[in-house]
Amino acid sequence: MAIQKVGVVGCGLMGHGIVQVAAQGGCQVVVLEAEQKFLDSGLARIDKSLTKLAEKAAEKAVKEGKANEADAKAKATADAAATRARIRGTTSQQDLADCDLVIEAIVENLDVKKKLFKELGAICKASTIFASNTSSFPIGEMATASGRPARFVGLHFFNPVQLMKLVEVVRTDSTDAQVFEDAKAFGAACGKAPVACKDTPGFVVNRLLVPYMTEAMRMLERGDATAQDIDTAMKLGCGYPMGPIELTDYVGLDTTLFIVEGWTKRYPDEPAFTVPAVLREKVKLGKLGRKTGEGFYKWEGDKRA
Ligand code: 3HC
Image 1 (cartoon, rainbow, N blue to C red):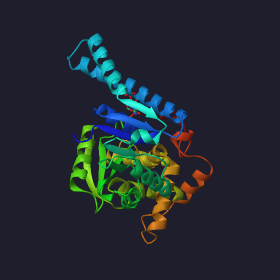
Image 2 (image 1 turned 60 degrees about the vertical axis):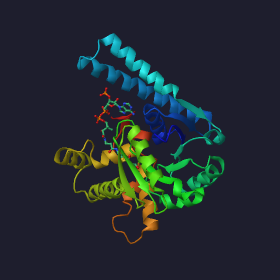
Image 3 (image 1 turned 90 degrees about the horizontal axis):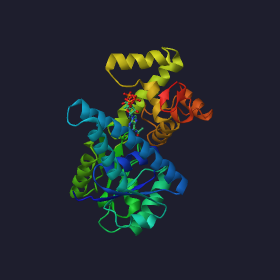
Image 4 (image 1 turned 180 degrees about the vertical axis):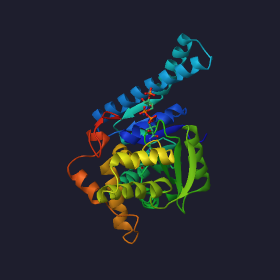
């Protein structure tokens, strides 16, 4: 694979997962954060996830009769340690200079992302491919800011990155064909199924998913059904793992609001892109979903209370 050394900017909710799956895929990974405390908390999440996945891998190997319990545990633990050893944290942008690929997973703020890519464009070797994990901003604008639009793609992972099997690989009109193929190969090495998409609002998933979530909130506002009944309906009626209201809590109400507000400004004539009042109100109250312990539901850690 052309991509051997990967830089990830941001070790938060999405960034830590991207770091982990890239390392699981055999890449050397350098993760950049603004402060050591953010690195520490992101790396601790990776340790927790690797431990969990190792437990599951050992259980599976025993169940399938591939190894006895002690050998299965020893192998899974060694694999997790080898993955972890491929990950290094840094607070210095300069450490990304020789990466083959740098993926941005920072705050959803286009100006901040453009500034970052401009800086990276000046630091990284000429062959470095740049990628953004943005959920909703145009890839083309960041590609222009980077000064190397031919070597720029979107790599949109899904939450939780360790478990969700998809990555959207987004190309602009300027993306070089080989760069696009290298980005798809990287996604596959991370254990994901890459789907190709043009640089359109929300790409494939969020263009369909976010209007579905906001429509569910409007049902709630009208009193058509309760949150529980909307979620049960979509889980049992369509076989989805979570209903739309629970999923909004899971993704984060602030993130959802941010995406829709951005689209409303950019595409004011698109009826699917409007903000439900209940979403705005809850964000104002700091009820952001799973991350704050309350959104439409109450949460205890990663689970609904
Ligand atoms: N690493 C390792 N293990 C993890 C993990 C992680 N990050 N997160 C959860 N797990 C483990 C849990 O500990 C649990 O282990 P156990 O079986 O031993 O208890 C196991 O995975 C299953 O998790 P849960 O018990 O919580 O329950 P589920 O079976 O419901 O799985 C889920 C959780 C995979 C999140 C599932 O509910 C799901 O697929 N939900 C929908 C998620 C979704 O749609 N994501 C996309 C959001 S949109 C997006 O990301 C785009 C953005 O741009 C907005």
